[in-house]
Each structure stands twice: as C-alpha cells, then as structure tokens.
Image (cartoon, rainbow, N blue to C red):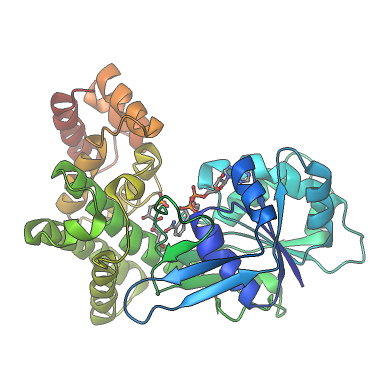
Length: 381
Ligand SMILES: NC(=O)c1ccc[n+]([C@@H]2O[C@H](COP(=O)([O-])OP(=O)(O)OC[C@H]3O[C@@H](n4cnc5c(N)ncnc54)[C@H](O)[C@@H]3O)[C@@H](O)[C@H]2O)c1
Ligand SMILES: O=P(O)(O)OC[C@@H](O)[C@@H](O)[C@H](O)[C@H](O)CO
C-alpha cells in the first residue's frame, strides 16, 4: 500500500504521516519547502514524541520525499501509483495542490483501484473543497478513478523548538474521523482512524469546541501578554472566559445534534485539560495564527455565533473572543495585519461585512458592529 501526503509540517509528520506509517503504507511526503524535503531525503527516520501523561515515542522510517515545486514528474508518478493521497497544508492552500493531484489521477490506469483522497485540515468539508479544485472545469473521468472523503483530525502539534530536526513533539491524544459512506463498503485500511456514518457532527463538535476554545485561549492570552497556551489556562480568570465560550458552543451543539449535555461537558473539560498540558510548547501566536480565516463566515467563531443568534440564543463570550481576534496585532502574521487594515480603512459596519461575510440583516450583525467599533477604537496598528 502506498500513500502520498502533501505538507510535511507539524500535523503531517506528527500525526497523518505517523498513522499512515503505522497502517503499513509506504509513505511519500510532498512539500514546497526545499529545506524540509532535503532533510527528509537525507534522513532514515524521525521520532514523534508524545509529551504529557501516557506519552511514548514512535519512530517513523522508510519514507520518501518529493519537492512538489521542482519534481513534478516524480509527484505525478507517485500519485498515479498510490492508494491514498492526504494533505495538511492549510485550507487556503488546497487550490495550489489540486493541479498536481489531478495530474496524478489522470495518469492512473483505468483499471487501477480508486485513489482515496482525504484533506486533513481544520475546516468543514475541506475534502469537498479540494475535490472542486481537482475537478475544475473539466471533470473528465476523475470520479471513476478517485474517491473523495471528508475527515476531521484532532491532535495538538505545536511548532517545534529549534534543534528538533525532523522530530516532532505532540500531545498523546488523537482522533481522525473519516466519513465512511464515500467508500461504498470498502474503506482504506487505517487502524488509527475512526470511520463514521456522517462527519458533520464530528467536525462541528471538533471545530466548535477544540478550535473555538483554542482560538479563544490564544486571543485572551495574547490580550493579557501571555506567550504559552498552558500559561493562559493557569490564569483562573482567563480560564473562566474560555469556559464561558465553550458553554455557548456546547448549548448550540446540544440543541443542533442532540449530544447529551453531560457528554459534551466531559468533552469540554477534557479539552481544557489538553490545552493546559505544560509539556506542550504551544504558543498563542501559533494557535491564533491567520485571524482573517478564523473570523470568516463558517469558521470557529462566526459559525457557531451566527447559528446561536438564528436560534435566539446568546453568544457574548464568543463575541468577546472575536474582539480578541480583531486585536491580535502580531506584525509577523500577514492576516493579523490585514485585519488591522480592514478595521482602519472601513466603518465598523463595512468591516464586519468584509471580515465575517454576514449580511446586515443577520441577527448577529449589530452585536459584531459594536465589537468592530471597539476594536477599531483600540487597535493602534
Ligand atoms: N498543528 C496542529 O495542531 C493541527 C491539528 C489539526 C489540524 N491541523 C491542520 O493541518 C493543516 C497544517 O497545519 P500544520 O500545523 O501542520 O502547519 P505547518 O505549517 O506546520 O505545515 C504545513 C506544511 O505545508 C507545506 N505547504 C505549504 N504549501 C504547500 C504546497 N502548495 N504544497 C505542498 N506543501 C505545502 C508547508 O511547507 C508546511 O511544511 C492546517 O489546516 C491545520 O489547521 C493542524
Ligand atoms: O490550525 P489552525 O490555525 O486552524 O488552528 C490552530 C490550532 O487550534 C490547531 O492547530 C489545533 O492545535 C488542532 O486543531 C488540534 O487538533
């Protein structure tokens, strides 16, 4: 069995690559980073270190690496022969990897088993988005040669400290949920993954609990001048604010999907414990990265807050976290700079439309206009 994984970064090496390796796939990483690909080509193995309670080390070896910019032919050949293609490159990068996946699919013999394509990004239905780019204007016989399945991946993999090489520190916890109906009874063999009949409850529960809570932690922490995620949780007042955010998303998830309140409460508490893992060197700057994406319409804040408003339910804790996102003025983060420019260059109403994609008639809109007004008045850069 062969797998090609796009994006040999934190989650690529520390989670998707690990589970594919453990499932017995011959693994090829594809990435645009020349330095990273050269390191992978030169290495025989790397180690995934699970840090925190119950953590252990896993050694991954026998992988190949392809520079997806300069080794296009090798990449096409690898995809043409693969059983599985996965990616973890960021939701906004799917359009850039799609042409290479399409070339590989086109090069597959008609009689080959269908290629399984799965995006492992923090976004709802990311594989559907990737599929649309792969199909493009001329779908040809793509769907007779490939099957596309949405997935939800959960494991905190921070940026790695200097000197780690290819090794990756990760938390011990993980979950990879994959929608099963796409496979017509013949799912790929990945023992570490969980196949589910419908992904929507899983991805929304994950995105609107883990990622909403994580982003709120980052923005509240950044506002308080704290660098490390676990230190934000150690501050009782900030922990209470994060908990309040997760009570709002809990009320939505319970109302929408019928989750048992106590089950969701246990999930929330487990996640807060994961964030508080002091051995995980995770930062508010990584977790808060790309605030423009995180403030967008179907993402971790506006997604649940809009649905709560539509149901006549409150979201003041969520909107306080959104204020934090608008005040996340990290100069090295291009999206943080863009948020500042949108606030500075527009009246609050227009800024909310541009940032969140919400229409002025939406029941959440007026509340967010006040948030944008405050952010505009507070932000200096
Ligand atoms: N780190 C986590 O805790 C975590 C957990 C779950 C999901 N995710 C999701 O996984 C994705 C990647 O996150 P990450 O933390 O691993 O980021 P990362 O920056 O560590 O890794 C991304 C990798 O993609 C590569 N890349 C960028 N453009 C590319 C292209 N056109 N072709 C091939 N490779 C390309 C980069 O060079 C980099 O190595 C994101 O969608 C993120 O939300 C991350
Ligand atoms: O990757 P992002 O930018 O969408 O979100 C940052 C973190 O919340 C995220 O990477 C988590 O660590 C991960 O989603 C945990 O499963």
